[in-house]
View 1 (cartoon, rainbow, N blue to C red):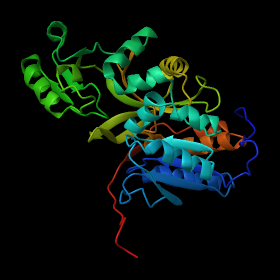
View 2 (view 1 turned 90 degrees about the vertical axis):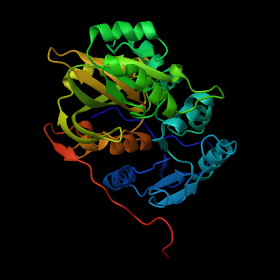
View 3 (view 1 turned 135 degrees about the horizontal axis):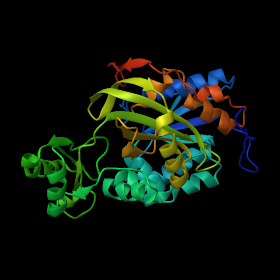
Length: 359
């Protein structure tokens, strides 16, 4: 059995219906379903509340209740979020939007304000959250803790790019501050200038300063097999590793894993321990790693949220929503909830639902 904790409630308040808030759920309807199923499996009559800025998004009306929110960059966002928390008294708030997570953990102290209200808010510390949005900073953070990662330079660093090109046949170009694989191109040295220019044209604007080559990064292409690895940390003990969940990527689509086969977690465990401890992880982070023929692991991306690869391990037996809910409720937790079968292949498919216009 995993260590258990008693449930906590704000002093002087009546215990509300157990509630999980999934913020900016977007297209991840399966996550809503799995938190619902977790309540049922635990024998608890709870609810999953979805917050969305767009009332016609696929997830906005899919939860047990919907809460319309301003966008994360709207001045009214903070007041609306705190009002939601004060009214619903949720146990857990999970956001799956990269930009909202930056707002909660870096640009404001909202995550800490929610925790002061006894809401569990999974995440990493401020520096690592910032690094998840800045691929150049992430390289520096990984190097500091001894985790192998490809050399990373900005598109402006012509000497660094020339040095890379002399050592490898292919270079990777991406947006420095992008989400997923935005701006991605894999090119030879002869095509690098054109690829950087194209990435600059499509790069997201992060300030009032015009987008430039500093908003694009260049890396050598990493050799080996690509894996998605979920690193699961204890919700109550930041930095304490609970599980490592791995799958080998078989096909990508729009920057997200489209087909994968579950794999052994052991090759990634040491790196997972370093990342969990250094980032003071609570909850789950989705990490892209490469494993080469001699067993060397390289990290290329870190996303502190449920990522698009989590469904592959969930369908193979892991149940992070159930583990997180039990932890939030102070119920006994089972090691088996964070175990999964290796060698299970799964693929995503399309679906659609009406979100407005039908009585």
